[in-house]
Image 1 (cartoon, rainbow, N blue to C red):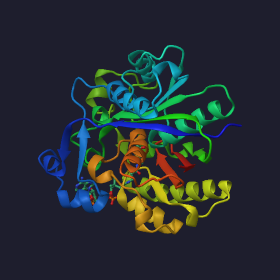
Image 2 (image 1 turned 30 degrees about the vertical axis):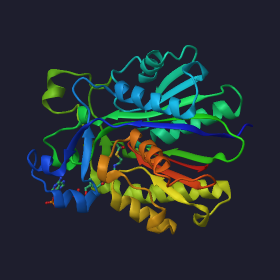
Image 3 (image 1 turned 90 degrees about the vertical axis):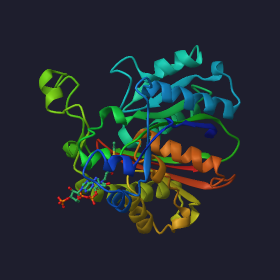
Length: 325
Ligand code: ACO
Protein backbone atom coordinates (compact mmCIF):
# COMPACT_ATOMS: atom_id res chain seq x y z
CA UNK A 1 0.00 0.00 0.00
CA UNK A 2 1.28 3.44 -0.94
CA UNK A 3 1.51 6.29 1.59
CA UNK A 4 -1.03 8.95 0.65
CA UNK A 5 -1.02 12.58 1.74
CA UNK A 6 -2.33 16.04 0.92
CA UNK A 7 0.00 17.66 -1.63
CA UNK A 8 -1.95 20.85 -2.40
CA UNK A 9 -4.65 22.97 -0.75
CA UNK A 10 -7.04 25.71 -1.90
CA UNK A 11 -10.15 27.57 -0.79
CA UNK A 12 -12.69 30.07 -2.00
CA UNK A 13 -14.98 32.19 0.13
CA UNK A 14 -17.57 34.45 -1.50
CA UNK A 15 -16.89 38.17 -1.04
CA UNK A 16 -20.17 39.17 0.57
CA UNK A 17 -19.94 39.26 4.37
CA UNK A 18 -23.14 38.92 6.43
CA UNK A 19 -22.53 40.09 9.99
CA UNK A 20 -24.50 39.42 13.16
CA UNK A 21 -25.58 43.08 13.02
CA UNK A 22 -27.08 42.41 9.55
CA UNK A 23 -28.99 39.43 10.99
CA UNK A 24 -30.36 41.58 13.83
CA UNK A 25 -32.28 43.43 11.09
CA UNK A 26 -33.72 40.19 9.64
CA UNK A 27 -34.82 38.19 12.71
CA UNK A 28 -35.30 38.59 16.46
CA UNK A 29 -31.71 37.91 17.50
CA UNK A 30 -28.66 39.73 18.85
CA UNK A 31 -24.95 39.83 18.21
CA UNK A 32 -24.42 38.88 21.85
CA UNK A 33 -26.68 35.77 21.62
CA UNK A 34 -25.03 34.54 18.43
CA UNK A 35 -21.48 35.02 19.70
CA UNK A 36 -22.01 33.50 23.14
CA UNK A 37 -24.15 30.56 21.91
CA UNK A 38 -22.18 29.73 18.73
CA UNK A 39 -18.91 31.67 18.42
CA UNK A 40 -19.97 33.07 15.02
CA UNK A 41 -19.37 36.76 14.19
CA UNK A 42 -19.96 36.73 10.44
CA UNK A 43 -20.40 34.42 7.48
CA UNK A 44 -19.95 34.60 3.68
CA UNK A 45 -22.88 34.56 1.28
CA UNK A 46 -22.56 33.62 -2.40
CA UNK A 47 -24.10 35.93 -4.98
CA UNK A 48 -27.25 35.03 -6.92
CA UNK A 49 -25.16 33.99 -9.93
CA UNK A 50 -22.78 31.81 -7.94
CA UNK A 51 -23.69 28.13 -7.54
CA UNK A 52 -21.85 25.54 -5.46
CA UNK A 53 -19.80 24.45 -8.49
CA UNK A 54 -18.52 28.02 -8.99
CA UNK A 55 -17.15 28.01 -5.44
CA UNK A 56 -15.75 24.50 -5.90
CA UNK A 57 -13.97 25.35 -9.17
CA UNK A 58 -12.18 28.35 -7.64
CA UNK A 59 -11.02 26.34 -4.61
CA UNK A 60 -9.94 23.47 -6.89
CA UNK A 61 -7.87 25.75 -9.13
CA UNK A 62 -5.96 27.05 -6.12
CA UNK A 63 -5.35 23.50 -4.85
CA UNK A 64 -4.01 22.37 -8.26
CA UNK A 65 -1.67 25.38 -8.42
CA UNK A 66 -0.49 24.69 -4.87
CA UNK A 67 0.19 21.02 -5.71
CA UNK A 68 1.96 22.16 -8.91
CA UNK A 69 0.18 19.56 -11.01
CA UNK A 70 -1.71 19.92 -14.27
CA UNK A 71 -5.40 19.09 -14.71
CA UNK A 72 -4.49 16.05 -16.85
CA UNK A 73 -2.66 14.54 -13.85
CA UNK A 74 -5.94 14.26 -11.89
CA UNK A 75 -7.55 10.78 -12.09
CA UNK A 76 -10.40 11.22 -9.61
CA UNK A 77 -12.63 14.10 -8.52
CA UNK A 78 -14.92 13.81 -5.50
CA UNK A 79 -17.09 16.71 -4.38
CA UNK A 80 -18.69 16.51 -0.94
CA UNK A 81 -21.82 18.64 -0.85
CA UNK A 82 -25.44 18.77 0.32
CA UNK A 83 -26.17 21.74 -1.95
CA UNK A 84 -25.33 20.55 -5.47
CA UNK A 85 -26.17 22.92 -8.34
CA UNK A 86 -29.01 20.48 -9.20
CA UNK A 87 -29.88 16.86 -8.25
CA UNK A 88 -27.91 15.65 -11.29
CA UNK A 89 -25.43 15.78 -12.94
CA UNK A 90 -22.89 15.90 -10.16
CA UNK A 91 -20.95 18.99 -9.14
CA UNK A 92 -17.82 16.86 -9.73
CA UNK A 93 -18.78 16.59 -13.44
CA UNK A 94 -19.12 20.36 -13.68
CA UNK A 95 -15.75 20.84 -11.96
CA UNK A 96 -14.16 18.28 -14.31
CA UNK A 97 -15.36 20.16 -17.38
CA UNK A 98 -14.33 23.59 -16.05
CA UNK A 99 -10.82 22.43 -15.16
CA UNK A 100 -10.31 20.44 -18.37
CA UNK A 101 -9.56 17.24 -16.45
CA UNK A 102 -9.99 14.80 -19.32
CA UNK A 103 -9.90 11.26 -17.95
CA UNK A 104 -11.00 11.44 -14.33
CA UNK A 105 -13.70 9.45 -12.54
CA UNK A 106 -16.09 12.00 -11.00
CA UNK A 107 -18.85 11.81 -8.42
CA UNK A 108 -20.42 13.67 -5.49
CA UNK A 109 -20.98 12.33 -2.01
CA UNK A 110 -23.61 13.38 0.50
CA UNK A 111 -22.34 13.07 4.05
CA UNK A 112 -23.24 16.57 5.29
CA UNK A 113 -20.66 18.03 7.68
CA UNK A 114 -18.57 14.85 7.61
CA UNK A 115 -18.46 14.93 3.78
CA UNK A 116 -14.86 16.05 3.49
CA UNK A 117 -13.53 13.27 5.73
CA UNK A 118 -15.66 10.74 3.80
CA UNK A 119 -14.18 12.04 0.51
CA UNK A 120 -10.68 11.95 1.98
CA UNK A 121 -11.11 8.33 3.01
CA UNK A 122 -12.51 7.22 -0.37
CA UNK A 123 -9.73 8.95 -2.34
CA UNK A 124 -7.14 7.54 0.06
CA UNK A 125 -8.23 3.96 -0.72
CA UNK A 126 -7.99 4.45 -4.49
CA UNK A 127 -4.50 5.97 -4.39
CA UNK A 128 -3.11 3.64 -1.70
CA UNK A 129 -4.09 0.61 -3.81
CA UNK A 130 -2.56 2.10 -6.94
CA UNK A 131 -5.82 2.54 -8.87
CA UNK A 132 -5.24 6.29 -9.27
CA UNK A 133 -2.26 8.64 -8.83
CA UNK A 134 -3.89 11.95 -7.94
CA UNK A 135 -7.31 12.83 -6.57
CA UNK A 136 -8.97 16.21 -6.22
CA UNK A 137 -11.38 16.32 -3.28
CA UNK A 138 -13.58 19.33 -2.66
CA UNK A 139 -16.01 20.32 0.10
CA UNK A 140 -18.34 23.00 -1.28
CA UNK A 141 -21.65 24.44 -0.13
CA UNK A 142 -24.09 27.21 -0.88
CA UNK A 143 -26.12 26.72 2.31
CA UNK A 144 -27.62 30.21 1.92
CA UNK A 145 -29.78 28.67 -0.85
CA UNK A 146 -31.47 26.27 1.60
CA UNK A 147 -31.59 28.56 4.64
CA UNK A 148 -34.88 29.97 5.90
CA UNK A 149 -33.99 33.61 6.45
CA UNK A 150 -37.04 33.99 8.69
CA UNK A 151 -36.01 31.22 11.12
CA UNK A 152 -33.70 32.56 13.83
CA UNK A 153 -32.98 29.01 15.05
CA UNK A 154 -31.04 28.23 11.87
CA UNK A 155 -30.32 31.34 9.77
CA UNK A 156 -27.63 32.67 12.12
CA UNK A 157 -25.62 29.46 11.83
CA UNK A 158 -24.79 28.82 8.18
CA UNK A 159 -22.57 30.23 5.44
CA UNK A 160 -21.19 29.49 1.96
CA UNK A 161 -17.70 28.46 0.86
CA UNK A 162 -15.42 25.81 -0.58
CA UNK A 163 -12.14 24.11 0.22
CA UNK A 164 -10.13 21.66 -1.87
CA UNK A 165 -7.19 19.29 -1.51
CA UNK A 166 -5.09 17.33 -3.99
CA UNK A 167 -4.10 13.89 -2.74
CA UNK A 168 -1.13 11.92 -4.01
CA UNK A 169 1.64 9.56 -2.97
CA UNK A 170 4.01 10.91 -0.30
CA UNK A 171 7.36 9.59 0.91
CA UNK A 172 6.55 9.84 4.61
CA UNK A 173 3.58 10.57 6.87
CA UNK A 174 0.26 11.17 5.10
CA UNK A 175 -3.14 9.83 6.12
CA UNK A 176 -2.47 7.48 9.04
CA UNK A 177 -5.97 6.40 10.00
CA UNK A 178 -9.64 7.18 9.32
CA UNK A 179 -12.85 6.25 11.12
CA UNK A 180 -16.29 6.80 9.52
CA UNK A 181 -19.72 6.12 10.97
CA UNK A 182 -23.46 6.75 10.81
CA UNK A 183 -26.55 6.36 13.01
CA UNK A 184 -29.63 6.81 10.83
CA UNK A 185 -32.09 6.62 13.73
CA UNK A 186 -32.19 10.39 14.30
CA UNK A 187 -32.87 11.67 10.78
CA UNK A 188 -35.55 14.09 11.95
CA UNK A 189 -33.09 16.14 14.02
CA UNK A 190 -31.55 17.68 10.91
CA UNK A 191 -32.89 17.48 7.39
CA UNK A 192 -34.34 19.19 4.36
CA UNK A 193 -37.79 17.58 4.08
CA UNK A 194 -38.82 18.18 0.45
CA UNK A 195 -37.40 18.33 -3.06
CA UNK A 196 -36.52 14.64 -3.30
CA UNK A 197 -38.49 11.59 -4.45
CA UNK A 198 -40.52 11.33 -1.21
CA UNK A 199 -41.87 14.88 -1.39
CA UNK A 200 -41.15 16.36 -4.82
CA UNK A 201 -41.32 20.13 -5.13
CA UNK A 202 -44.90 21.40 -5.27
CA UNK A 203 -46.80 24.55 -4.44
CA UNK A 204 -47.55 23.01 -1.02
CA UNK A 205 -43.94 22.10 -0.17
CA UNK A 206 -42.78 25.58 -1.13
CA UNK A 207 -45.64 27.18 0.83
CA UNK A 208 -44.79 25.12 3.93
CA UNK A 209 -41.10 26.07 3.73
CA UNK A 210 -40.04 22.44 3.33
CA UNK A 211 -37.09 23.28 1.06
CA UNK A 212 -35.19 24.80 3.97
CA UNK A 213 -32.93 23.22 6.62
CA UNK A 214 -34.89 22.00 9.67
CA UNK A 215 -32.87 21.43 12.81
CA UNK A 216 -33.42 20.56 16.47
CA UNK A 217 -30.23 22.22 17.64
CA UNK A 218 -30.11 21.49 21.35
CA UNK A 219 -30.74 17.73 20.90
CA UNK A 220 -28.01 17.62 18.23
CA UNK A 221 -25.63 19.54 20.45
CA UNK A 222 -25.43 16.73 23.02
CA UNK A 223 -25.10 14.02 20.37
CA UNK A 224 -22.42 16.04 18.55
CA UNK A 225 -20.24 16.32 21.67
CA UNK A 226 -20.60 12.59 22.46
CA UNK A 227 -20.08 11.44 18.89
CA UNK A 228 -17.14 13.66 17.99
CA UNK A 229 -15.37 12.63 21.21
CA UNK A 230 -15.96 8.95 20.42
CA UNK A 231 -14.86 9.35 16.77
CA UNK A 232 -11.61 11.05 17.82
CA UNK A 233 -10.87 8.43 20.49
CA UNK A 234 -11.57 5.62 18.02
CA UNK A 235 -9.31 6.96 15.28
CA UNK A 236 -6.50 7.66 17.77
CA UNK A 237 -6.75 4.12 19.15
CA UNK A 238 -6.76 2.70 15.63
CA UNK A 239 -3.53 4.60 14.91
CA UNK A 240 -1.90 3.55 18.20
CA UNK A 241 -1.74 7.21 19.32
CA UNK A 242 -3.04 9.24 22.26
CA UNK A 243 -4.18 12.83 22.62
CA UNK A 244 -0.59 13.71 23.62
CA UNK A 245 0.52 12.97 20.06
CA UNK A 246 -1.97 15.45 18.53
CA UNK A 247 -0.47 18.82 17.54
CA UNK A 248 -3.72 20.31 16.22
CA UNK A 249 -7.37 19.26 16.15
CA UNK A 250 -9.28 20.67 13.17
CA UNK A 251 -12.94 19.97 13.96
CA UNK A 252 -16.10 20.62 12.01
CA UNK A 253 -17.03 24.23 12.75
CA UNK A 254 -20.70 24.05 13.84
CA UNK A 255 -20.46 25.66 17.26
CA UNK A 256 -17.41 26.74 19.29
CA UNK A 257 -19.06 25.42 22.48
CA UNK A 258 -19.28 21.93 20.92
CA UNK A 259 -15.62 22.16 19.88
CA UNK A 260 -14.39 23.25 23.32
CA UNK A 261 -16.45 20.53 25.02
CA UNK A 262 -15.00 17.84 22.71
CA UNK A 263 -11.44 19.12 23.16
CA UNK A 264 -11.85 19.15 26.95
CA UNK A 265 -13.10 15.55 26.97
CA UNK A 266 -10.14 14.52 24.79
CA UNK A 267 -7.64 16.29 27.07
CA UNK A 268 -6.63 18.83 24.39
CA UNK A 269 -5.75 22.36 25.52
CA UNK A 270 -7.06 25.45 23.66
CA UNK A 271 -3.76 26.06 21.85
CA UNK A 272 -4.31 22.73 20.07
CA UNK A 273 -7.71 23.69 18.63
CA UNK A 274 -8.11 25.34 15.23
CA UNK A 275 -11.15 27.61 14.92
CA UNK A 276 -12.36 29.77 12.04
CA UNK A 277 -16.08 29.59 12.84
CA UNK A 278 -16.12 33.27 13.84
CA UNK A 279 -15.46 34.26 10.19
CA UNK A 280 -17.54 31.72 8.28
CA UNK A 281 -20.15 30.00 10.48
CA UNK A 282 -21.08 26.42 9.62
CA UNK A 283 -20.40 25.60 5.95
CA UNK A 284 -21.20 21.87 6.30
CA UNK A 285 -18.81 19.85 4.11
CA UNK A 286 -16.77 22.98 3.32
CA UNK A 287 -16.03 23.73 6.98
CA UNK A 288 -13.38 21.20 7.97
CA UNK A 289 -11.48 21.45 4.70
CA UNK A 290 -11.47 25.25 4.75
CA UNK A 291 -10.23 25.19 8.34
CA UNK A 292 -7.48 22.75 7.31
CA UNK A 293 -6.49 24.93 4.34
CA UNK A 294 -6.32 28.07 6.50
CA UNK A 295 -4.39 26.29 9.27
CA UNK A 296 -1.81 25.26 6.64
CA UNK A 297 -1.63 28.76 5.12
CA UNK A 298 -1.21 30.35 8.57
CA UNK A 299 1.64 27.97 9.46
CA UNK A 300 -0.40 26.36 12.28
CA UNK A 301 0.29 22.99 10.57
CA UNK A 302 3.99 22.34 10.19
CA UNK A 303 6.06 19.54 8.68
CA UNK A 304 5.94 16.54 11.00
CA UNK A 305 2.78 17.66 12.84
CA UNK A 306 0.00 15.22 13.65
CA UNK A 307 -3.39 16.68 12.72
CA UNK A 308 -6.73 15.27 13.87
CA UNK A 309 -9.84 16.01 11.76
CA UNK A 310 -13.12 15.38 13.58
CA UNK A 311 -16.59 15.91 12.04
CA UNK A 312 -20.28 15.33 12.72
CA UNK A 313 -23.45 16.17 10.79
CA UNK A 314 -26.84 15.29 9.32
CA UNK A 315 -27.46 11.59 8.87
CA UNK A 316 -26.31 11.46 11.61
CA UNK A 317 -22.81 10.85 10.27
CA UNK A 318 -19.34 11.28 11.64
CA UNK A 319 -15.77 10.98 10.47
CA UNK A 320 -12.34 11.41 12.01
CA UNK A 321 -8.95 11.21 10.40
CA UNK A 322 -5.33 11.50 11.48
CA UNK A 323 -2.88 13.04 9.05
CA UNK A 324 0.85 13.26 9.63
CA UNK A 325 1.97 16.40 7.80
N1 ACO B 1 -31.27 34.51 18.66
C1 ACO B 1 -31.85 34.62 19.87
N2 ACO B 1 -32.45 33.59 20.51
C2 ACO B 1 -32.45 32.40 19.87
C3 ACO B 1 -31.87 32.23 18.60
C4 ACO B 1 -31.28 33.34 17.99
N3 ACO B 1 -30.71 33.27 16.78
N4 ACO B 1 -32.04 30.93 18.23
C5 ACO B 1 -32.67 30.32 19.22
N5 ACO B 1 -32.94 31.21 20.22
C6 ACO B 1 -33.62 30.96 21.48
C7 ACO B 1 -34.56 29.79 21.42
O1 ACO B 1 -35.80 30.15 20.87
C8 ACO B 1 -34.66 29.42 22.89
O2 ACO B 1 -35.57 30.30 23.50
P1 ACO B 1 -36.62 29.75 24.60
O3 ACO B 1 -35.75 29.23 25.73
O4 ACO B 1 -37.41 30.95 24.94
O5 ACO B 1 -37.37 28.66 23.91
C9 ACO B 1 -33.26 29.72 23.42
O6 ACO B 1 -32.67 30.64 22.48
C10 ACO B 1 -32.39 28.52 23.58
O7 ACO B 1 -32.48 27.74 22.39
P2 ACO B 1 -31.65 26.43 22.20
O8 ACO B 1 -31.95 25.82 20.87
O9 ACO B 1 -31.79 25.55 23.40
O10 ACO B 1 -30.16 27.05 22.19
P3 ACO B 1 -28.78 26.31 22.21
O11 ACO B 1 -27.96 26.83 23.30
O12 ACO B 1 -28.93 24.82 22.08
O13 ACO B 1 -28.10 26.85 20.87
C11 ACO B 1 -27.65 26.04 18.65
C12 ACO B 1 -28.69 26.59 19.62
C13 ACO B 1 -26.62 27.13 18.43
C14 ACO B 1 -28.34 25.69 17.35
C15 ACO B 1 -26.95 24.79 19.25
O14 ACO B 1 -27.93 23.93 19.78
C16 ACO B 1 -26.11 24.01 18.27
O15 ACO B 1 -25.08 24.47 17.81
N6 ACO B 1 -26.51 22.74 17.98
C17 ACO B 1 -25.72 21.80 17.18
C18 ACO B 1 -25.76 22.07 15.72
C19 ACO B 1 -25.00 20.97 14.99
O16 ACO B 1 -24.00 20.46 15.44
N7 ACO B 1 -25.48 20.58 13.81
C20 ACO B 1 -24.88 19.47 13.10
C21 ACO B 1 -24.00 19.93 12.02
S1 ACO B 1 -24.84 20.91 10.82
C22 ACO B 1 -25.01 19.98 9.34
O17 ACO B 1 -24.82 18.79 9.29
C23 ACO B 1 -25.51 20.72 8.12
